[in-house]
Amino acid sequence: PGVICSASPPNFVLLFADDLGFGDLGCYGHPSSITPNLNRLAAEGLRFTDFYCTSPVCSPSRASLLTGRYQTRSGVYPGVLYPGSRGGLPLNETTIAEVLKPLGYATAMIGKWHLGVGANGSYLPTKQGFDHYLGIPYSHDMGPCRNLTCFPPDIKCFGFCDVGSVLVPLMHNEDIKQQPVDFLDLESAYSDFAVDFITSSVKKKQPFFLYYPAHHTHYPQYAGPGAAGRSLRGPFGDALLELDNTIGNLLATLEEMGVINNTLVFFTADNGPELMRMSRGGNAGPLKCGKGTTYEGGMREPAIAYWPGTIKPGVTHELASTLDVLPTIASLAGAKLPPVMLDGVDMTELLVRRGKSKRETMIFYPTSPSEKYGLFALRMGKYKAHFYTHGAEHSATTPDRDCPATAVLTAHDPPLLFDLEADPSENYPLTLEGDPDLQAVLEQIQKAKLEFEASMVFGESQISKGTDPDLAPCCNPQCSPRPSCCRC
Image (cartoon, rainbow, N blue to C red; front, side, top):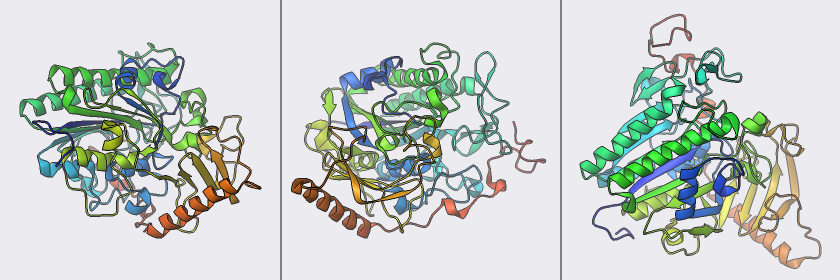
């Protein structure tokens, strides 16, 4: 039986921002972000200070969120999937949508999938438990961006995107609706689709799961007329405001339909800020480095759980992760867990009773995990040990020399040990000499590392299957010359 006793099973709205840093939201301390709806969720819900994604880049992080399993198990590594990738999230992996379907839930997704398209759309969301899908099946910069408009009236997308790849498609279920996508209208299309889905589900008296992985605030940013030029942070702030506006529309719909008190709304993000884009890449607040690295800035994310009447407002310093979302939703819905090794734990006790987290450790894998190196860092309690460190191109441009790709792979023996409560910026490694207590902590961490690595079976790498340009989505599949003829 589910934990919450109500006449009807709870609904779930899962919001997932893209390349959003720990310091990017007003409710996490950014002085000039305009995010009134997210601020409301944070003020009236539970705000996490120590919440982690599982990878400092996008596809693997999404795989973990939807399956409750580290990306190394499902094979969504190294790096990310591309429009023509042969692989994708394996169909034998069980997503949150597939966990809820047997209980009669309606399921829908809007936005950025990035877990594969494959031959004949074999990896699309409709093959992974989602009844309805409207979105771009990968990152919106994975297409030529010179000829697209990102801000009204006619401001071109800024930056160099993948010239020579197909124009960015907008898909509805398995069909291409638009190629190239109209960025100025995209967010309102998503918002309308989601509002219609919530409304029709409630009218049918059907519990629902809505997954909204946004393209915001990934570079190059875009925004339609409702948000363009209305923030204080330029293009990044406008994109963030547009995301916030959609969240406001969803909350208003939940209220109008009378289900806001029976709906868990959960917000977090896939990885840290893309600092190579400077002020257009996002902000990690006090945390070190950003996207692509296993420092805190790459993987510690804002997270908010909102459920009026069930989750009391407040802040939690408990350790939690995207891995924990699937087991929590399953527990609240009274659903069966998939019969596989899960890495997530049920957060119900933490959310509903403000109890302790069941999560004892957090594992930090690099963008290219391998059995040879294993995990790069491990957090236990307030301590984090780095066994390897490595900068990343995604985190270039900051003054910190540890962040860019020029900071080469370095092994640390003994590992670098930080107290993240005293030093969340990972500036001051602790001295182990003459401190038996710290040495005992490190021994515990090393034991946990060995146990975890013994339990890890690496799945076949999906990304190493390579790409085939013919697999890239094209609305005129037989046309030539590709990719330029793929438009409709």
